[in-house]
Image (cartoon, rainbow, N blue to C red):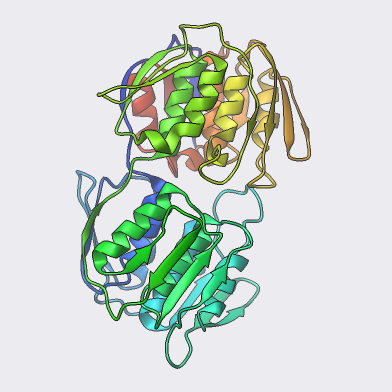
Length: 421
């Protein structure tokens, strides 16, 4: 198994280019099922999750061409099955994202229960309730879900989500684009990835309004056509590099960003005394200009503070003098990194969904685990300022979500190596 070896580094310095968003490209790839013609997606990051989604689409009969420049061509015109096998579905939670477009396109889908990071239950109930509201018959077994559209196909409906789930919003949106009539998704997720998917579908000929708000209106159309689209920049990668500059007290220009997508992260870093400025070149972050102070964060659905940045931000807070509190409201099991940080000398106590951090202690290198994708990034950030060597295992989690992770950090001066154990 591969590992990261991280040693205490000088303040990181330089420029870094943010890749296309993992959390956007996976539903975009699933949406390419819908038109029955070739779609082209640009700025696609080379990630393990993208490879898994490629394999899923190929298993359905699709033709995939991933070019070196990050251009991904997907042609699903020869799709010959609507079943996703367990071996593929179990590798990644986003595998379930093909269910909506399969139902819309063919009237049938059978997908084995998805895998991915263990950060909470993340049930698919909201997806299934949405499909049922659109007229599908849903059969849930111990390890798979099967759905059949009604005799007249999918029918427009008003759907209220009990929680503004990103995945459910996306899956229902794709299921509804070819439905007969109008669909409303209320209490919809408002994340930028929702807007990106809606823009892609509208380029195909869909009629979607309100993406990015809590109510999305979808007028069903008869058919869709192939199109081309460029993925939005990855706001979580952007946030990770913002925190890399902050935790090492470094200076960085982060390019290919959308400022609004990281507004909450920038606001909290500024509260701590980190300089975050938008320039013509990109986002300038300097963690070494001011004496840094502690702050509190509370994760919320977008546009609130993103849960995916909670663990990297916590790693940063361990290095700042003073007491801070982190409240996690999105996932019930997203403090697994706390034990790993404490193993490095941090002083963090948890109580339910609340973590209390007494910052300012010098972290020490240790053997730690990347308990999930973002926790792995947090361990790397901690390792950059810890004495000695930090050995991080289970790094396949990290490589699921960050393109050229080691290369980008090394280009900024980080002492990090990837080794095969």
